[in-house]
Image 1: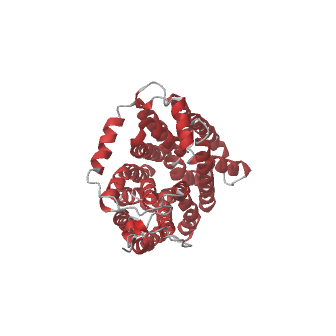
Image 2: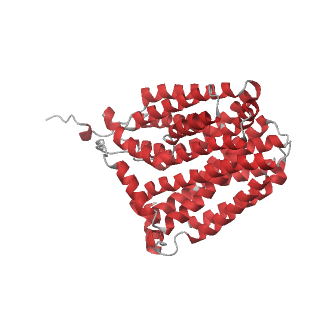
Image 3: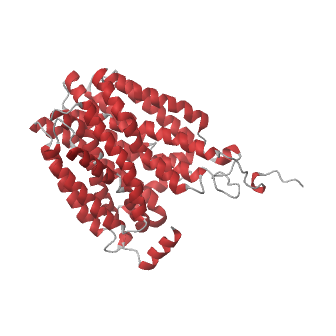
Length: 439
């Protein structure tokens, strides 16, 4: 009897697997969504000038965006299990386009919080690391590390690609054309997603890349959202969760919360051109990608806690030096700052993911989703604090010094992760050797 099932056939030797096209579209989608994260720093001065809104109220909208971005991610993963990657991505992109379009016609500060903070925060948060992880898990058996590394690094790359161009548009054409450009980009990605992205290779009768047998599409997980909440409930009783969350909150406060949101206006206060300041932030984005890849390589070989201590301590030193480095020109010292800060910027992610896995086992990915939500809360809090400090003191000096001090606290907390029993108990040497063998 002839075998006509996909599972009975050997993998076809074709030069290009559909999984790579799906990964490419997913990567472009993440890039487009990430570009919105760079925009608040460019909006602060134009909105303050046009509407006379306080920088605190503008920072509040950025804060809501960051918090919603973080909180939506664990549930977005559950929704993808329930309704599929493609549907969730399309709804997220449509939400982003709607939020961006409404932002261009807003007339009150609360509308900025609603449109940019809530709508765009929910849309971009749904297309973050959980989106990258789900696409990779469904479509790849081989090359998963390469794909997940590329997709997660696409976020920093998105800011790299768009920020200088957006800064030029804001400087020469105004802030509304810049947002319209982002909305158009998201609209294009909506079309590409509808045409190319699929939930699972089985939808097309294909195997995942590298699979030796046909893989059936998993049944929709009706209880995924409940599991997400159950994991949260169980993990918050662990000291390990709060140590991981506390360090990662400082990570968010000292990257998204202050550097991505307030560096450009702080540089403008010192007489630096907005396009130059935006180019410096983009340089941070370039080296963030390099730093993340290098950090992932080190995490397989060095105690992740030690890496976090070095990363946070180094970041603290840099932030303490920043007030003395800011000026009208981007000299060699400032260039060195952005290069080194970029290398440390997202480097905290691989060791934090590894520590979540070691402490919480099979629930480690979901726990990291919640730890990442705490990261965004820290980012949002610092975004508001930075704006209020600028309104009250006329400068950002105290903000940089507070951020440096928080990094010192995070370095000390990192030393205690995995010590003291509970879910955060330090793994045995035998467990570590087993994990090294698996790697």
